[in-house]
Amino acid sequence: MEAEIITLAARVKQIKPSPTLAVNAKAKALKAAGADILNFSVGEPDFDTPPHVCEAGKKAIDEGFTRYTAVPGIPELREAISQRLAQDKGWSYTPEQIQVCCGGKHGLYNMAQALFGPGDEVLIPTPYWVSYPPIVLLAGATPVEVPLSEENGFDLSEELLSRYATPKTKAIILNSPSNPTGAVFSAKALEAVAKLALANKWLIISDDIYDTIVYGDGTLPHILDVDKRLAAQTLVLNGVSKSFAMTGWRIGYTAGPKHIIAAMNKIQSQSTSNPTSISQKAALAAVSGPQDFPIMMRDAFVPRLDFIMGALADIPGVTCVRPKGAFYVFPNISAYLGRSFNGKVMANSVDLADYLLDEALLATVPGAAFGADNFIRFSFATAMGTIEEGMRRLAEALGKLS
Ligand code: PMP
Ligand code: GLU
Image 1 (tube, rainbow, N blue to C red):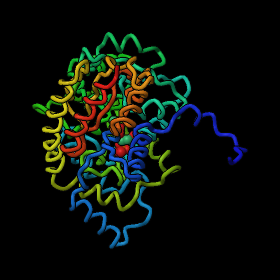
Image 2 (tube, rainbow, N blue to C red; image 1 turned 180 degrees about the vertical axis):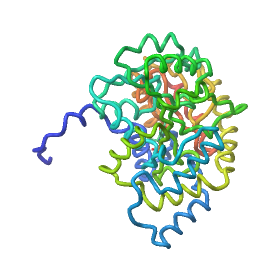
Image 3 (cartoon, rainbow, N blue to C red; image 1 turned 120 degrees about the vertical axis):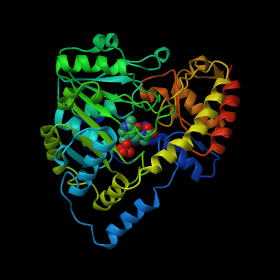
């Protein structure tokens, strides 16, 4: 064993590595070693990046577009994002109000570093995406979980928000459609957020990374559409990772008030400098080119979602709110907690996810990673055949618990 002579910073001890990426790495390693693992863990589209986007990346290399770029991203990409936000959403952002960064996660990191510090509280509707609390903690601020309930379809309410807000509340993170629940916040919930945010000068962070994946009639209420005044205290976060199957290219963006984007640019200039030049050219092709790819992907997810909901409904004791967007199901498996297999008790969602991996070769993410221990998450951004066999194995494995 190597001696650990050098001590680590206190901040790194506050957080754990991303559990979604950790389960994915474990599943991939087991698969590489020959195990018949079905991977429902990480959330990334199972589609390839569209060819015209790849071509733009290749062209950037061939043309020598391989040097530093402007810190907030190349002007033509920020212009294209500005136009897309105007065309698709009717929002008005100048290129100076947009920062391009190294993935959506990095956008959140930049904003937290620019805005939060000790004493600040950030409201996080829970179940939450795994990286929100650590990103808040790394900025020295305090994440405050606002527990949403399955019975209310994981929606927010004024009553709930008022219960967890304090004079120290600085911001709230909204993620609609949500990872991990697939829930979409109702217009009424957003009106409540708007009312409290305006009255108390909260910052609203709207993580819109799944906004192209909405089911049913496609209704997706947005906080900026509730009250135009909120543009002065809202940051909109998005990127091409999910919409254009570009998770590895690492391009995200944030739109918001100029002084906040300028502060985030300062952070970026002293950390990553700029997002990768080649990826920016590829993202430009995605944002400014045809928009049929995200629609094709969304349509491909529908039969998978239908199948998975049907299969879950057939498993005794499991309940699941039907997702309105994104590509995750978040079934409640609490009926199986406390049961055991070969003397090993499933005390929590981590035990159950471990059991499913060991016994059924199913990689899932335990609800505990999202602050909700009665659940487990399945990503259905995977082939229909995998889903069919996965649901069969799930039913069988849960049936073995007594
Ligand atoms: N927000 C949410 C809710 C996510 O699920 C993800 C996926 N990783 C991100 C942000 C960040 O996406 P990325 O950094 O891959 O662009
Ligand atoms: N957002 C994806 C997920 O939840 C990617 C993994 C990550 O960035 O943590 O699985």
